[in-house]
Each structure stands twice: as C-alpha cells, then as structure tokens.
Length: 140
Image (cartoon, rainbow, N blue to C red):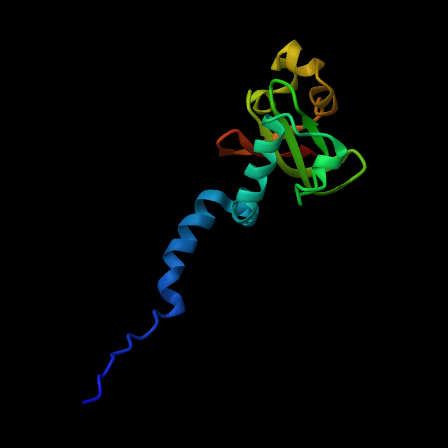
C-alpha cells in the first residue's frame, strides 16, 4: 500500500513582509550592514580569537581569510575590518574589547589613544554598536 505524504504549501512572500518591515524600521539604512556582519560573524570571531591569543604576525594573518587593516594584539584587543572607503575615509566593522571606540574621540582614555590602533582611529567613530564589543564604524 503506497504511503501518501502531504506537502504543505510554502508560505507566500508577503508573509515575511512584517518581519522585514520591523527590521528595516528598527535598523533603517543599516539593515544591510547588520545583515552582512551577522553573515560574516563567525569569521570575525575567529580573527578576534587569534588576536586574543597573540597570533598576529604577518605569516599568521594569512590564515585569517579576512582582510584586516588594524590590529592591536595587546590589551585591549582591537581589530578593524574594512568594508570599503578611500584614503582616510573608511567604513566597516571594529572590534574593541574596551569599547573605547564608542566614546567621542576626546573622551577616549590616554592609554587607548597611545596604542598604534588608537592613534590610527583618532578620527574614527561608531555608527552603531552590534553587540559583543563589535561596532559598525568608520571615518566619514
């Protein structure tokens, strides 16, 4: 006797509109950037783990499979992953375990500003925190 399997119809596209409307409404134009971050987050976490373990030499960076512009292997761990930009203007993701990058430049600690990455980021700021010390950041 043959077994019949009922196939449920797929939900129509309009069924997902309320979810997307909520996300776009809460994140606005950054919806795509936040989505891109979450799609790449496991790769970014792998880089942060390597940096936290002190594995930052140029030969070790080739295994990261992520373009990284700035790294502070000391304390605090800072990693800057650019997504685009030109000359001094950039945008992308910044990981800062001290969260100093979220402060206005004049309120960042002297110790943070004294690091090579802190000095390089002196004119950079944050568009939005994405959690776990990650930020959408850049120099605009």
